[in-house]
Image (cartoon, rainbow, N blue to C red; front, side, top):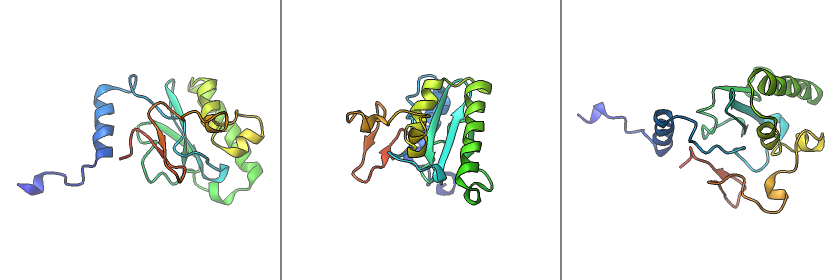
Length: 154
């Protein structure tokens, strides 16, 4: 009888299952998985018309698991292209997220604020933690090593 149960059902999977059951509208979404995400490791995950999140790639903690789409660092060849080509791709993906998929510009800028290169280029404001110690999101806690505990991590 013990073989019938998934002993690997973690707290993360339980939270994902709960949000999948209850729907995404009531979920509280973070803007980023980490306090700082360099462009070479930036993966944008989003659900059209709902939310966008900056995630450190590789996403070992499944922070973007409930979001429908992802691009940038998770794309084939991202690691081998230069900084200028990465910026070109970033602009293209931002167009897709904002124009095609109707995610608000404010949400995109908030997510990009955790990428230092995007802040330097003026695409996003400084992240909240650099603007006066504000929390990154309502339910997050920042560990001493800068790791953000989001809704889908244990």
